Structure formats: structure tokens, C-alpha cells
Image (cartoon, rainbow, N blue to C red; front, side, top):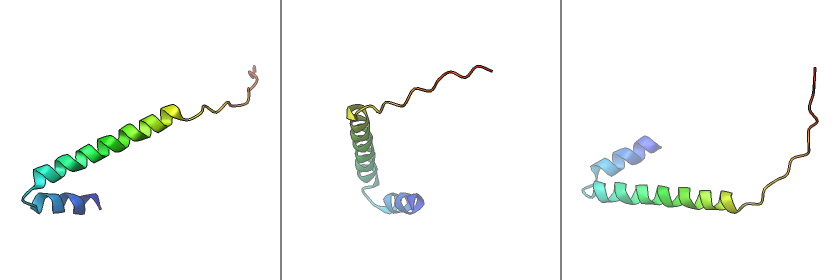
Length: 53
């Protein structure tokens, strides 16, 4: 699928602008995902006793 998108972008006359818009969209999605991860409540895991052998 990515190869199809890349070929489609290369054939267009405005390939540079389309590539730039795609990069901006990816960076925005990454920023939103990071923001969501940072604002998510932390999950506390049950304490595991130390095992000494």
C-alpha cells in the first residue's frame, strides 16, 4: 500500500506539496498520540515480591 501511495505521489505534478502535506499529517498524528499517552492515567501494577534463590 505504501508503495502505491509513493508511486501516486511521484506521478503528480504537485508531488512536493503533496509529500509535504503527508509529512505534516504524520507529524500531527504523532504529536496527538504522544499527548494522549502523556495524559493517560497511570496503571499501578500489583507488587511482586522479590524472589531469592
